Length: 635
Image (cartoon, rainbow, N blue to C red; front, side):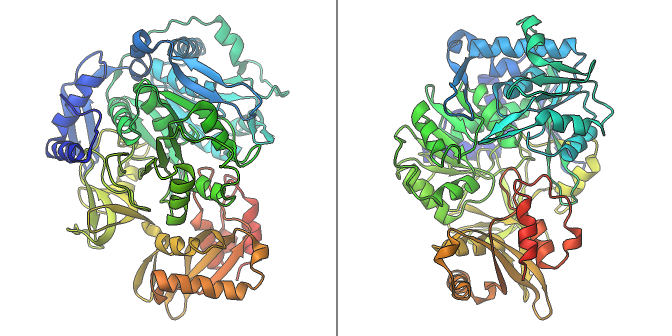
């Protein structure tokens, strides 16, 4: 009998030990006992990291939507599968049951078929956080089409790049989207993008904001009339275990996005198993991940992982600051949310306003808090733990990547003792290694190195769409027979892992390797600081020196910035050592961020090194306007 639900720390160690001693047997037991198959596999695992090539459950036949929807109908048909919370708090929520989801996915799948989409075709989905987004994803999976979701906030240029790279045959979009008090013309963005795309034959348009849009005859169709005519019966396509399920683009260091390819069976099993354990999900819980389905977090932990467990998963269309900074907590109270999963960027933005917007609401339903997207700094961790969790809801500080498909290092709530800023222990089946500059594994504890994974796991990306060489070069060429994450990490005295940031965010100052994350953590502890980013810039004596871009909570509180600079450097000196002090400190109104909330240090490095002529495209940033302000005031 497999341990599908881990309940205590001794059990974690027992299950983990079994999972790494005999991974194939461990995952085979999980697959056999908890999922439905059209045909069993011929071999659980074959792999070769030198090619690299990995196959899980080779020869098996299945459809992921039967595991996410069909098998729940007999016992959970009337249970809410997707709970949609609109941007406007005055608009009613929508509860979509498993029975309703089954019918709506089948109707959408039949529309795709009548519009010429077949197994293996790529479908680009550029839809806001409305139910049609999740339903479109599942409809593609139902018929074996490969979905490529693009966050509905990317520019037309970014959208066109992704459509062309995947050679998409169809785009699914909406007339527009609501975002706080603004509307975005999504259809207009699609029209602009398609001027540079030749592969797209059809565009399906959902109505959301009821705007006047241009519809191109023969290409563009309103979605709802097609759904109204479609049958709600659609047989699920038989898929091979290793058939691609989706392509999801992630930014590359070269600027050209990488289309990570995730396949069907292993991804399903791993996201379902991680969801169940990392959030300790129980039958009547109401789980909310605030991410967008345009990111891997949304794919794995809004759609596939929760639905494979028969969960109720919340989709939120809006932003945490609209109509005020209490919106998240209003939704927690309204729907009695039990698990809440969000990004450190959001936590810091909310913490900046203290507990004024928190204290109004009843958060007693919360059982588990989660953090995703970047390492969470200590100040934000404590605010989240104290003000939101009331010190009773453990924080799962999850480390993983678009490439990994699922959570890799995390505490298991009520099982693993937590530690601020530490992702703690590897998840079941994950075998991390820390390597030195020469590729030698660093044994023991209280060590730091480059984070690699030395054995395959079921949800890992299999390739980069159309460019397997780039996949090999990026992830498997740095160290022999290892997946290189691109991140650095330290392992403390008990074996807990702390992610120290991207390895390219390590700056060598006077021969010392300095990770930016610990320095930023130290700065962020200053009561005046809201957020910071550290980059290196050329220095005649040190080789590289440290440049700090710092956003203050309230500029008016600190009129004497020279004193504040001294205080910040003293704090760094106290926390890390004098070697880590900043040569330059620039106070900014904001920091350039991607739509997922990651600070674009590449841009800051260009500004710090006076290379502003090669700043690159900033149109896909969340806040492109701040780049000029930073350049104008650079030191």
